[in-house]
Length: 120
Length: 132
Image (cartoon, one colour):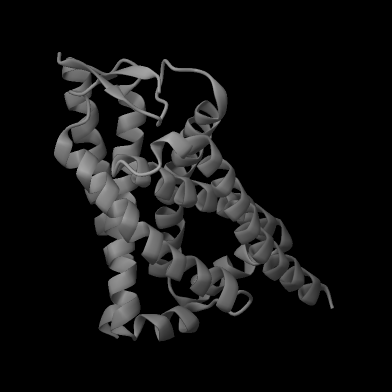
């Protein structure tokens, strides 16, 4: 087995662990999401169709966990990639905060868009 | 900066050879594509949903056209590879099957092709039914 030199201080243990946890959430939730939209309801997708799905608590839970887990996993993944290409010190701090803000903003936007279905 | 040596099969930047390199590179490229797609996905869906039922249904009409179904398949290929290779990476994190990493990558490729074949059949039969 070959030896690789690994810098252990660039990512952070908790972010690494959350990346794995959200990966498992996405494996299950994204499977449900993709099968529901791309296999079972293809050709049948509409406002009413989505409203019908969101009437079930199960799909509300799936959609919100997908929104949160997907955003975290995607943006933290981008961060991990960018950290391999010279983001250190203040640039790293700025990058982390910028991606956190982007994530929170998109979570708020996604939630705001789901709201009419959830409350009707 | 703490630097340590550890045994690894999940080849990272700086180690550039063999099946592990391609597994890592595909994972990274598909990951970046998916992250950027996710932002676009949330933006497009949420904006259309907020605009009301008519705009939302008009969006789906576009998204269910043959061009977008084929683009969907390309997206799905990235999702399916990233997901199945992700299971492989998690196994290595747990210390499982590190020495079988090369063989496992071919299992990942085989499983990805099989899943994509199912989605391709669904997608192209849908496109065919649209034309009739």
